[in-house]
Amino acid sequence: MHHVIQWSGGIGSWAATELIRRAHSDDPITLLFADVRIEDRDLYRFNADASARLGIPITRVCDGRTPFELFTQRRYLGNARIAPCSQLLKQRPCRRWLTEHTDPAKTILYVGLEPGEQRRAPGITAGWRPWRVEYPLMQYPGLTKDDLLTWCRDAGLQPPRLYRLGFSHNNCGGLCVRGGQAHWRRTRDVFPDRFAWYAELEQQFRDAHGDVAILKRRRHGQTQPLPLRELQTSPVPAAALTALDVERVLGVLGLGERPEDRRRRLRVGSPATPGRRPA
Image (tube, rainbow, N blue to C red; front, side, top):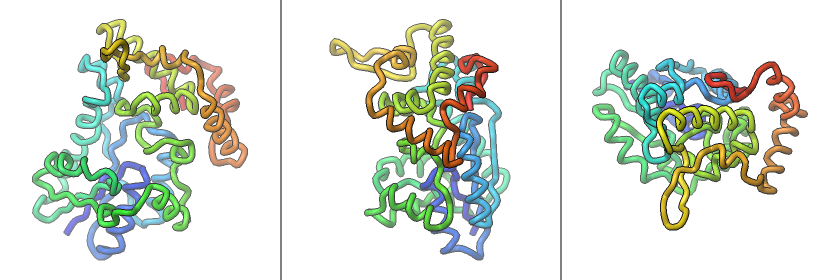
């Protein structure tokens, strides 16, 4: 049997791989990674470290477009309700690879959903037919993300830095359009250059296509678009200082880039220049 893990660069897919590797060490295992080209640089560090520890190379597939390039081409801005980037930049390249390299009758796909994400499983299972899908972490109902992060460190791996900075996942460098206001506030506070870049891209999309936005808000009993530029200029909560301090400490320890170093490096050009992705 061929075991294919849908490798995201997150802690869940790593933990799922560990379980499958131990249970099926004599069978072929593939780590299938769809690169959307806006990932945090530390995701690639984690990919390399994890691959070396596991003894399994990562198979990278890539559509070639970034999410915003896709949104612009399709004239549709991704959001929490509908995110075409998930289907077209992740699922489609993976399905193409699976079609070319596997036999559905002899292949099992694995997704690293955590026990609290059971509601997502039926849709994922249906979406990957005719391949069979399993969820290794679902066997352990009490398992938490903190448990997975501790397991990762105990295995000698440094988890992706986005978890240390308060993000719930390691997708898209903190720029996932499925995230809500709290997620985007954290991106604004921890990665201001990155946030400014997306705010500018969103504004260009709005200028071309009207009053749409990645985020929504309730105002006067109605749901309205909430542009990132408005979120960008709203007061920074006190909790943001903690996130920024964490990033600064990581830089001092050599585990990340200090905010002041990042600003110095980016002075050569505007971080909000369309198409230019901040570090």
